[in-house]
Length: 88
Image 1 (cartoon, rainbow, N blue to C red):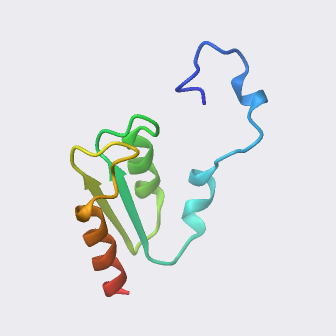
Image 2 (cartoon, rainbow, N blue to C red; image 1 turned 180 degrees about the vertical axis):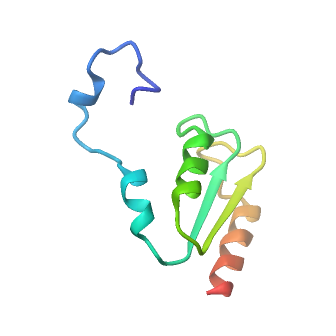
């Protein structure tokens, strides 16, 4: 919220849901697939990369070129997901 509404003071106090993914990602030992839209306008791609960096192996990172937040699930992404599942 701070990234989208920096002009609202104390925005964190207004937000009920906390998305503390970085706090918990290190506890997940299962295989993980991170799909990041290169041009995501809602969630900055570097947040996804930071999450990937903090995750334990096995982990896979796929950046979908020229994809936005709502256009990331193209055939390319579906193929990446299928490949990930086949590796399990």
